[in-house]
Amino acid sequence: MRSMIWAVPILLAVSEGAAAQTKDIRDAIPVRDEVFRASLSSSEVAEVERLIPQLGSNDYEQREAATQRLALIGRGALERLRSAYFSSDDLEVRLRIEDIVHAAYFMYHVYDRYGFLGISQRTVPKTHADDSRIRPGHMGIEIHQVTPDTGAERAGLKKRDVIIALNGEPLKEGFGANANFGAAIRQLGPRTLVHLTILRPGNRMTRKLEVEATLGHCPEYLARDPLRMREIARQFLLTKQQFPAWWAKHFRNATGHREE
Image (cartoon, rainbow, N blue to C red; front, side, top):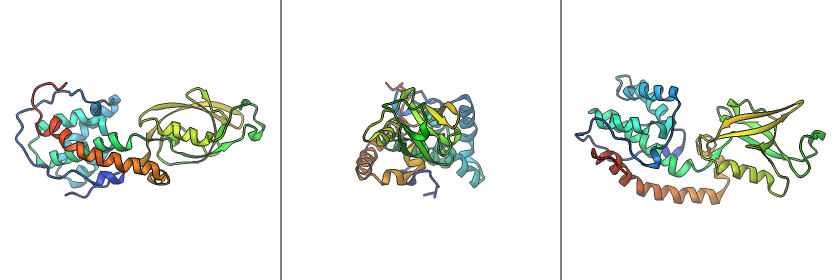
């Protein structure tokens, strides 16, 4: 089986037993399945359309790059990958599509459950720097570090910025407030847009950014929480059992009838 570099460890566990089959279907019919429900921007759609033919390129590096990029795009590419799977007679293309779909399925059911903002943080007392903009009974979260190539970095967040509101709701002071903020972010699925109200010396601003999958950027973050890791392990085993039937329904044994 091909060696592929994935963003998360589980994506190395590509499904086995893929085999070439003669397909009677040339145009895939959209399916009403939640795994397929992910929107793409017009530029991402164009990118997917450009990358799919490269899965069968004669250039190995181009095939690998296209595979990895489509895996990162994930669920949003599934409908087009499904169409390509039905229409292609190239075993290489179909094996790679199965790898990508397998990765997207696991990301959705296992790892996409936990959102990642892209910062490390600490609680800031309401008296921080005598800033009167933090109201009594509320608090701020100071950014200690911004993780490269994350929504936080792309939104322009900086070290020592102070977050005082999430989606317009001020952060309330109290025991466990820092942990509560982190938990609120984790419960948001990847590609969720959030608005953070930020304090900087002399400035108050709002930054919009996209939450990402925790394990894709920071696996050690989850590893520090044994309860969460046990839940991930349980969900992984369940998903591993479910995937073959899901794959057979939507790809291997799919018919021309619309699925409800």
